[in-house]
Length: 297
Image (tube, rainbow, N blue to C red; front, side, top):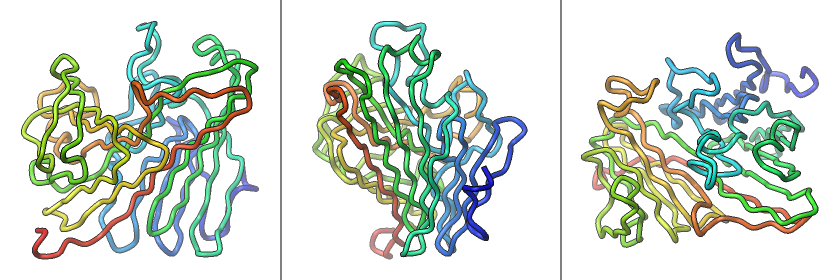
């Protein structure tokens, strides 16, 4: 592990509960990534509030779901399509990933690449050989690329998501722009197809799949006076979720629900990906910040 450390920039430490984690502090930002699940739990550009909700009182303890950071949903999103006894959102978020490369880039950003491939355990749940690469580029912006390669000799299908929890000043005061006029599936109303013309605001629990949607989304946060921009490539579905108050989730009790919103870069439902042998597909999400103007506030 020491060979992947970068002096004064990147160190690897052991968490007594969740194992090895990578800690990055460069000229632009700080971040933290656990090898368990390939799970980024922290990203904060210098001079700003954190961007990713870190659920400080939560822990990565499979099989319980961790409702913070950016869990990786793969090779299926939500319940397994045919076997409801299998874990929600696939198994990649519960596997131990390997570090394959760390680097300082010419522009001063830091790159970390993790990998995961099939094992006897994963083959019990998903009968395909595969190779995953998860690359993080940490700078003023955060870019995450999830590359899937089909290393089996048969066709394979996946659904997937970067299940991103964004930290906000107050959920009740934000609005989400970029999805106006897009059709969405309301997962809390019998999968009904709907459409809205205005920026999204929160007045109750919400679980929507916008499809088709390759759009850039923006979280307008008037409390923290900033805009979080979520750009994506090779994703034609966007998931927006918050469980609201009085939910039954083990690590989102009290008012914790009001400190985040999930906007997920995804390939789900009819946006599922089919890969032939030796074929690859890369899902990319880029997160950046802007200050709000007085007019936007």
